[in-house]
Amino acid sequence: MVASLDKSGRADRSVGAKGSFAPWWDEVRATSVLALPLVLTQLAVIAIHTTDVLMMGWLGPQELAAGTLASSFYTPFFFFGLGLLTAVAPICAQALGARQYRTVRRTVRQGFWVAILVVIPFGVVIYNVRPFFHAFGQSEINAELAELYLQAAVWGLLPALWLIVLRCFVSALSRPRSILFVTLFGVFANALGNYALMFGKFGFPALGLLGAGITTSIVNFAMFAVMLTFVSMDRRMKRFAIIVRFWKPDWTIFVSILKVGLPIGVSVVSETGMFAVAAFMMGLISVSATAGHAIALQCAAVAFMVPLGVSHAATIRVGLAAGRRNAEAVWRAGWSSFGLSAVFCMASAMLFWFFPGALISLFLDPALPQNAEPIALAVSFLGIAALFQIVDGLQIVGAGSLRGLKDTAMPMIISAIGYWFVGFGTSYYLGFVQGLGGLGIWIGLAVGLTAVAVALLWRFARLGSALDYREKVALATA
Image (cartoon, rainbow, N blue to C red; front, side):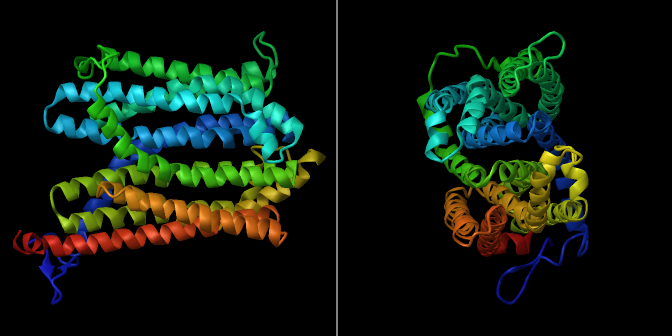
């Protein structure tokens, strides 16, 4: 007997075939094993962007501020495309389970098509970015430098999104190590390219932020080319012939990708968009506030990669349990993932709280007088970041767990309301109406993340309870 039922008919999760704690320990271990390569891949991805921010800081606070504005403008477009194309993974997985191998090839091919559909309008907007910066009150020097970076980096958007499609394909085939190795290659290539083109090394001209943008595009093309070569040569993967008849449409699958992926894309961009707008609000305050914000945000982004990897594992574990119609396992998978995320986020919060100076010194030299103000601001922002680490981890794992239950529409609504009405509204009110400046903006970010985390955890608990009632007979007789 897997579970007993209490008087209300709900499954009693404290009883299991192996004892009270053994099933939970097994779930924690299984989730950890699955999450590890996913976390490492996410850390490798963020390492590329962290390298950019570090080297922009070496150029100076002005370049760091302009580069941050450019990245903040670019990021929502990229993450919307990433969320949209995430739909390729479950569609491929279902086709593999049904042994419909042609559907796998067509799904990957239509994923490439969707990426092209996204890049055309996005690329036009990103390339012609200066009017947007002016409309948001950014200084001329910030707008000029940010535009230089973006006009070079935008050419790498399509291969970056195509790489996401290939990542979903290899993940569906349970081959995530390949994308990890390709991403690690990108980390080293990006650092080397930045060093050469930003600072004029190895005989190249010193191009500053323009050099960083050029490197971004080159590295994205190189990573996609390496991954496509691997997929085309690997014995197990090449039989799918994913680029055969690339021009042939399959509108049913094309629409399926849009239907499944759009809510995920909107949810992802709701959060990244809130942080992007926060960078713009920092630009209205001062260059020092923008630079300090960039440092604190990058530290928080690196720490966020671990719960993000755990959330991907939660999607798989919850999905597997739901597919087996095992409500008890669904409950364990979700809450075990929440626990893993919370433990790590508590550790990162302590790091931000007690050792901010050591982290900030990686970006700006504390010995330079011009860095004193952005460093002081970054310390205060990291203090707020320490407070919202746990809720930030819980909200992303909550979203991942709900995706495992194929629940994407309501989380999209929760994200939009929590981040834009609650988070952005609080940031604007405290930062500008109450005059708290950058500190008020960061408090608003924390409030928005907390609202979303509470709502998503409540929804998962509610859906888990509803699932219990639907499955109580099966659980009681198993």
